Image (cartoon, rainbow, N blue to C red; front, side, top):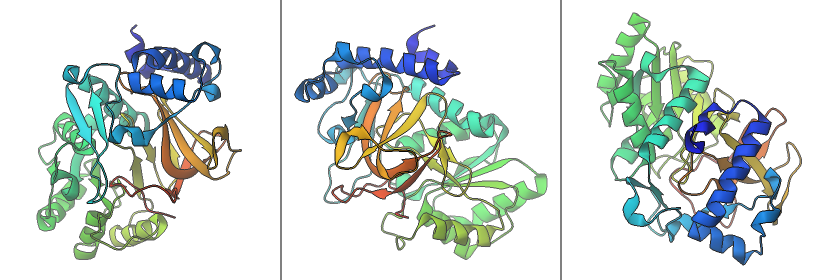
Length: 327
């Protein structure tokens, strides 16, 4: 089985570490940006024998470099971050978009079952209003793969969305309402209703449309409006090809080919203890063609069962559209 597809068959921590080390040895040579970074920090590739010895590439390098193992003209698609007026967009050059789709579908199925069983309603107006969103690409695939006649994107037509949801509730159809935070808040204010049978999943992002509030406060607003016991969340970004999911209370879990670690904020080469706040690093083995080892600018903490929380952004970091709200 090719290594690029074997990642979706991982069954243990030991298997994950073995595959991660193989991916590192490949990307440390094949990815020019990663190779230059490793040389700059004096990393001896042959001496890396354990997972936590692997150096993580600062995710900011996606803003002004092609972080890939292949030339730019060999890529199928380029995903871009939303950015802001004063910031440079990150760009992720993706050679094999099929690998992204397999990661998205398999990651969702790991926690929720086959997306084909769902009606998928995507409330992502800010993302639909620009080009290059990986979240829109994922949602479009979910909508197509669901094959339900009501699956669709909804911009600001909240009336139609409300009518559709009421009909799906009567039919007892398994339903996913995937939405950017500000749009879900707007919808909750205008059309509060009983959606107790619906998975409501927020992707973060107020986009300057609503006041920034804590995730807990937003979730309480949505729970009250829609009469649900939990609000689900998706954690992903332009530079990753996998997603982590929270099924409530802001605690995220990873599919088997994704791991989150937390480093000291003042020392990028030291790791925190369990439940201590630090800077998030991710190992995303679906990033087979780019770089799987990324040092992010999110603050968080991890727990012994592999779950994690996102607590905000490091102070020096510029704001990005995919940010989750500061707790």
